[in-house]
Length: 72
Image 1 (spheres, rainbow, N blue to C red):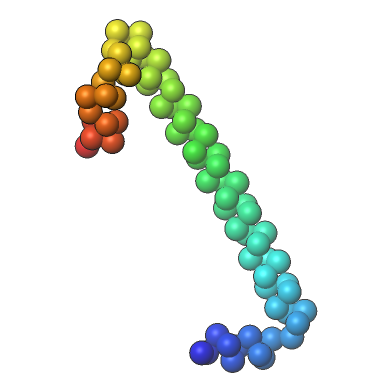
Image 2: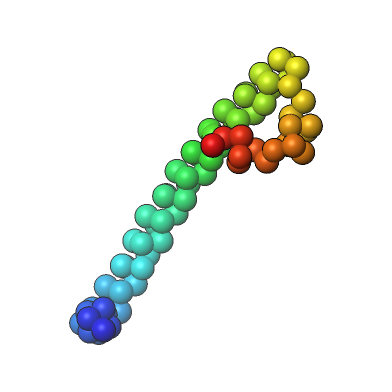
């Protein structure tokens, strides 16, 4: 309820600025998260390749035990 009162006290220009600023910040945060996901994916692929080179059949392993259970 206090948020609604505060919103009424802000002019339209202030509200527009607030929302635009929020979107800019969230877009940058999303971009950083995507970078992190990309790095994690690269690291996972390196480990998959190393396991394959060591003769581990990940397809067979995945059928036996879900990858999430292997990570516990």
